[in-house]
Length: 298
Ligand code: MN
Ligand code: MN
Image: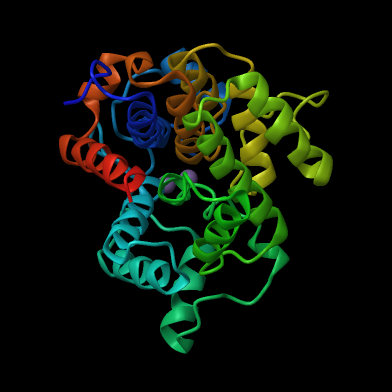
């Protein structure tokens, strides 16, 4: 059970990002597909890792967002690098393990790989779901010291197994580069001006300022990212960020997972509430901690 004392900043933030992913997933899954109004009526403010939800999870249990990231991270560690083949094999094995949930685009992409052996699904603008962005964290950690273009290529290699679409690519690369920048010392102001605003300038779908607060975000990746960015940039702590984002409902396990990676990377291990760390499934917690440490020393 790691706390910040004695860890280097980079290692500590990598572990916090991985735990943030799992905590956001576990917290958000309870209210996935609920509206903000339904959440408020049932919980007032939902800020307890309590399981349940449409998947009837145990308290502290995570979903595909975390388990796909762990499967991808394991394959990166075994191969010593990010490859499309490694990602495709890892996702295939992950689907055989009977995961608690799986997105339609992910399922279609893995079946395409099984049938054809192709590790890149054909380009399709309907693939603009959030499934490639939600699992990108191990790529960001494994490519920490590499040039930005290598990071982008590695992001797309894992993404294109299931999602081959410019909006998904743009979001996936942006999330990975924001985590990387934070681990290398960037603050939120830099993430805002050097990553989030440029993403919205390139693709207006991601505009998250001067637009209505994104409630009930869907799995369409611009919806997801708008909710994550509004929650992340308009709060000042790990706890407030995740609470804001998951109480918007919709695809709350995935907005929670992505917001959790970013908030963990920026605020560090000591900012994660003890009650959330203790509520997380212990095996998942251990896997996140050990994988984060191994990936950044790759
Ligand atoms: Mn999920
Ligand atoms: Mn989800």
